View 1: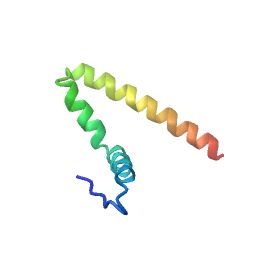
View 2: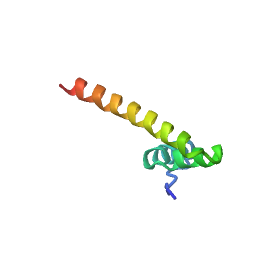
View 3: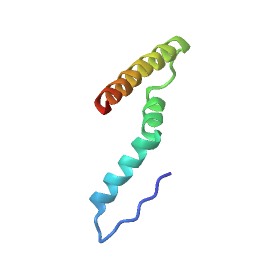
View 4: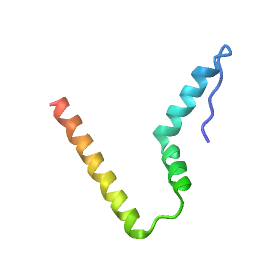
Length: 67
């Protein structure tokens, strides 16, 4: 559970911070996967493979920018 302190009554800023923290630590993705319900093992494998391909392409793009 992420905690954020609301400073000067800025609730909108605190909500933005909570959302960003949830995205970064992966709890948002876990919540979404729980809402989808049961996935067959083959579906889970295909989704993991697709995610891995997406991540590797993103890493490659980032490495090419830095060079």
